[in-house]
Image (cartoon, rainbow over all chains, first blue to last red; front, side, top):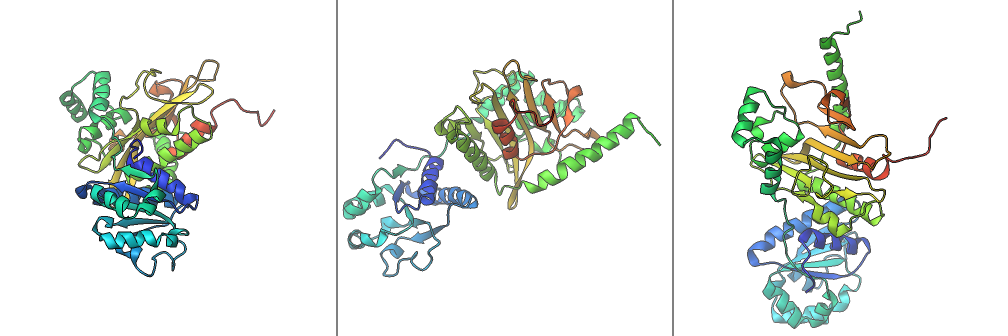
Length: 196
Length: 192
């Protein structure tokens, strides 16, 4: 596994692969309870790329990859597939997937989102597919959000008043709600004091 | 009849503000705050690729921050984790190869299937010898009617003094970044 880029970076990598018309395999490993959130995050990120004209991405269940009819053959405009449920495939299905890998030579970019066990089973029972994945194997790391407490402190220190005083001043109409004050109010969850 | 009273001037300013805000606000509608964040991040990464910024794409990703949504569905998008009130260059910012540097902050409110920007501040600072040391586009949050001074969206040219602020249109973050990245620098005179 390569150094752990955050999921938005992984999505950017997938978007680039799709834009290049690549037939790459990407594996994102997420703990069981994370899989749904990770899938939804990646789908949204790729959809953002889609608005720039780069991608058309569909989500499919893993058994469709081993089905006789490949899901993208009918719809040539699909350029990326998110595959869920690899962890539920049997050893035989994984071995068959590996044997049939030639079918994927002209496939869209395939992104497998699976559990650590699913990734391990894919690596063990479909070693040729796994070598296709190569460095495109990532652990799901959430992007680091804003450090809200630090941001709030920097505004509070500058204005030199406590939150209580600010609220009083707003009620008294003695402070202008400019972008900095508005930012503070949003971050401390007192947006009710902003109009609109 | 000519009316140069404060009250009449305020009415004219409010009318101008209405014209300046109406088109811009309705034409920039990201689906979510994250969508808006992604657009800004992609714009800056592209600028990095093109050499318009000194920061690498990885640095762009690290610099632009998105907060979690608050309970009313609003998020904060900002450069760095500290608000730079005093133009301290050691705080997080983006820089152009010519030495100009900038940061920004905006609030994005999500409602149903779309999001809208309710406030922003984008400031570009320039080195000595430029016509003004900084330029800032401010969009104040919506106020109550009696706070309306007709300057919700305004421009600061080299001074924080509100007495010198200039009415400005609502601009999409990408349009402001275009100005910061591609213009607001010496250029050929178009007319003698």
